[in-house]
Amino acid sequence: MTNSIQWYPGHIAKAEKELKENLKRVDVVLEVLDARIPLASHHPQVGEWIGTKPRILVLNRVDMIPASVQNQWLKWFKSQGETAYFTNAKQGQGIQAVSKAAQAVGVEMNRKRGERGLLPRPVRAVVIGFPNVGKSALINRLLGRKIVASARRAGVTRQLRWVRISDAIELLDAPGVIPSKLEDQNDAIKLAICEDIGEAAYDNQRIASSLIDLLVKLDFFSVLKSRYGVDPLEGTGEDYVYKLAQTRYQEDKERAAVQLLNDFRKGFMGAIPLEFPPTNH
Image (cartoon, rainbow, N blue to C red):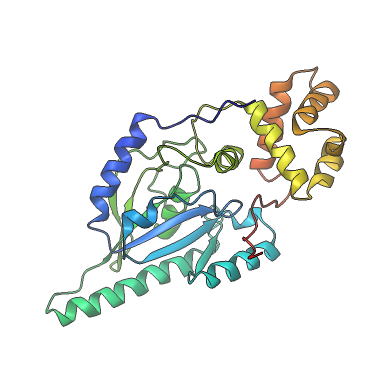
């Protein structure tokens, strides 16, 4: 069970190169994170890429975490000097606030342009983040119409293109970018559990076992017992997948693992965060 998660197909390397080129022409960066794993879904190189450009933090899939945890993250990001905008891009929740934040950057940019004797222009924004965190759904909501392909499979967005949202905002739709190497395998496992790395090579049984271990560690084990009738406290995550396969899936561990992952990803287990804000102990 020590094999690590492998990814980085060629199109993502190409996308990263193009994105870095285009970032020079951008005024504001909208970084989309997964609200269930805000830290693991933050690309470690984003800060280095964008330098001093304004960044708007969007935590998507807010419907998949409890309101109490959303408030904890709001406070934590505020303590880091950041404003977090929570969205459910599928349903259109929180989109207006993101749009206003981007427009506010444009107002400030055009004030500075005016001082230099330049004419106003739309603010140029880019949406970046891991594959499958909901970037395309966010862009479609900002536009108010479906223009960007969106699917559960990662790597759907391949070409970079500018989309005019209004007279005030132009948006660059960029493919999902994945670090060439994630130093922290725990982060890689969380990304795989949440399906935020797309077509990566990983073992479903290993990832499902890790999900069970994580849910036990975070005190969500009662959900597992009531939903599947198997007590996760009677062994490891690996044991749990094995027992579930025996009781429900004719000993097919792969089917049991895929079912567990799908149930979590679709929210059937309930609103469950896999990360909480760091505490300064």
